[in-house]
Length: 439
Image (cartoon, rainbow, N blue to C red; front, side, top):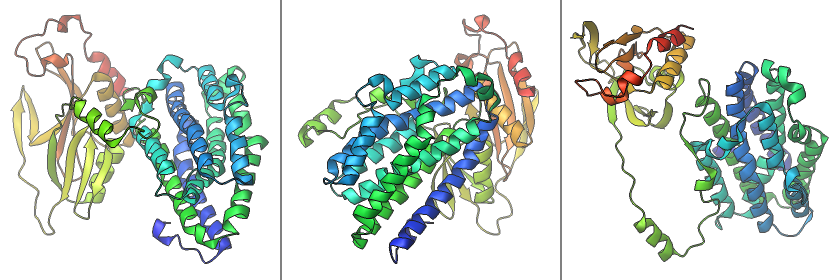
């Protein structure tokens, strides 16, 4: 279903399409949530920690939505739900606090919470906040976005998340030690009643009263479902190994949770006063035979993130660098000439490109490639052992024959060095990395 298809002949069709969209989104979520069944304890904690940031934003978003609504039963119900989220005056019973209690009982480290949000997800949440406050968006759109798309949908998602989480061996083992208060509220009759009642009042006060509202309501709901899908995809796609700790993150405290109330002049003055961030991002454009196969390799096998695309090219976020895949013209006999070159006693394919990674990320990538069943051109090994610039290396070919090399240096300060760095003698060797890859 796409946004262009959101045209409703009547009330019944509106709810039928809304239910269809919810079912499609939930089915997509299930394919992600199933990974929780076999996740390691660290993976489990890392994934579940990310949902925390939706709960933080949702409370304030709900307050914004309430402020925009006219008096009525729906407004009063949402206000009651907001009070419930905040613990009815008891901060220890606030749902955000209950979720933190759950994470702590699971084995999470509370000192890390506020700095572990995925930057991409905070961007999603910030954009949602701006839309809710945008005067150009109607309050009906807001109800679709955070009423239907929040209160009516969140409970269903959480119930499915809980279902898969409970199959995890670590959860089964720790059940008696885990604080379940948050889940008792959100998967039980308490939240089911909120979901059903919210939908009922949306129907009674909006849908059945004014058919003209269906477009804005449906648009808000559609955009909310898209945001939900992206939110969970970011969490699972950026968590291929043991933890999210190495991914792009940002602190909630570092972000402005409300649109600026400064005047335009003040805002411009602040921007001018900021020191511009230094940017040094490598850009590479390469030819590929088939974009679909290339996308599967770079995004699914290597874990890169898809960016802009046309029929003939695809932008890829490759460890923060700008890689562009261009489809070769039809009938081209080859991409470009390859040759083998000697490099410290090894034969390597030229040209090739790749990334110098830290050792943990390199090891995680090697495991990811191995688990995907994709063959190495040159399996993980140590090069320049005992010499300046000692590093772990692995080669892999993409479906078009482009060669990629990934390196992890014993000491990254020796990437360009001709002599040992003074720190190198204090570092452990790379042999352990090879053992990890073989596991």
